[in-house]
Length: 288
Image (cartoon, rainbow, N blue to C red; front, side, top):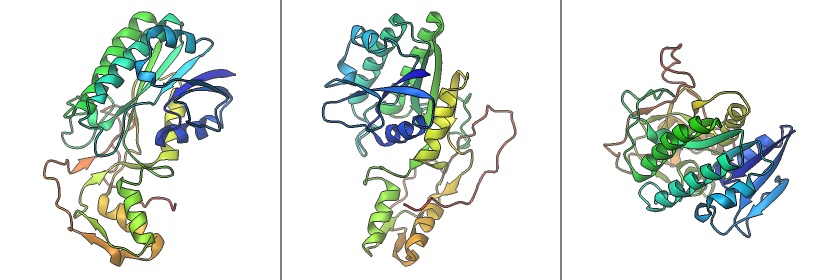
């Protein structure tokens, strides 16, 4: 039985990852803020701010651990993309890596974002070029490049898992899918853009299964936590509306389209040059 340490276990993605880990033969140790609760954790370590801890704290915390799933990062909707807290997360992550090497950690899995990529034609392959456009994405790229080089010297296995467009249980109510659910549940209009953007949407529990599966594999380098297919924001919204029988409450075009928003973002799970998936896959999100 392996011992897995998880940061960010009380968050949106972290809770789903904990559910996926509960189906594995492993013991979990979670680093949490005081007051946070993760019922599925076997062991807990409390800290007021994990990104303020030094390498010595992490070396002690990693004692007896086989693998780290580092999910924690500042992610408040509407603020995280440009926040200077990304610098704190970056520097704290690098100190964590120092502690990992000092503790002789076997495997470190970090969590990135599709926003690290150069968008180009919208097909974002794991080996594709990077072009971060926000402090959040730049901090993630910096973490990836530094950890990759650092762990190569130490012999620690390193995997960087880039998340795409997640939705599902525990999602922040300020995000798109919960907003539509909330409006339709109370019989109110949901004001949206035209919804022509195509995105690689994936349910958070499905994403967690991919994440944990890749973590327990022997894969190193970069992996996309995605479906490899895309649906439009309009189709996502229509799928939610059909659960309430209220397509009439969707007001497309009520909000302006961001002209700098890429028209297509899809994350193939294989490197460029392998079989190319269909560009658009029509599907709807699972009921809440």
